[in-house]
Image (cartoon, rainbow, N blue to C red; front, side, top):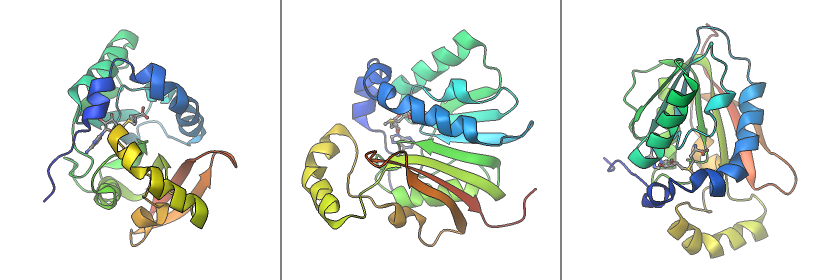
Amino acid sequence: MAEPHESRVYSDLAHFYDKVFGRAFVDHEHEVIESLPFRPGQRGLEVGVGTGISLDAYPPYLQVTGIDPSAKMLAQAIAKTRENGWSHIELKSGDAQQLEFADNSFDWVLSFHVMTVVPEPRRMMAEMVRVCRPGGRIVVISHFASPNPILYFLGRVVNPITKLLGWTTRLRARDVLEGQPITVERNDRFSRLSVHYCIIARKAGPDA
Ligand SMILES: C[S@@+](CC[C@H](N)C(=O)[O-])C[C@H]1O[C@@H](n2cnc3c(N)ncnc32)[C@H](O)[C@@H]1O
């Protein structure tokens, strides 16, 4: 069994994260969250919630749980939640590769810019699917390696550098999607030049 993983890079960067990475990620996260048809009383899990740049996009009628292994990242998210009085949001320590929730616990399981950070992304996806209820949705925003062979090769070349920064450029979307009991409903980039994909998948089974 793999060790729980906490990327040191993000802990070290926690105080600067929102200004450095957060600025690049926040608009797409909000755009996607605001497009989702959440219903009152539903439960959502955000895996690798970090400093909580996504949190203000969730509607107050969705019960949101956010997990992250980095105490320093999580402290920023907790501060945002307290300052804003978001009683619908609960934050705690946790590992994407070993989620401490029962099977079928959430209507929505979301993760933004974490899949390429963890050592075992396929196991992370399997865990996200496990805790999602049948008919629920898994929502992922992430960089993935390009299906274009030249860009894929370039990604491999820069991978040793990005690994130092905390993520891999070698992971392909199909590496994490294949073999899961899901139907992929969306798998596209935000624009032709974007390196970030949005994947929305429905877990097999009847809608509640
Ligand atoms: C690029 S940041 C993304 C944070 C946030 N989702 C966002 O969009 O701003 C990557 C996050 O993954 C978290 N992380 C690293 N290893 C993890 C693991 N095993 N399980 C869950 N989160 C993890 C890091 O602590 C960090 O908060």
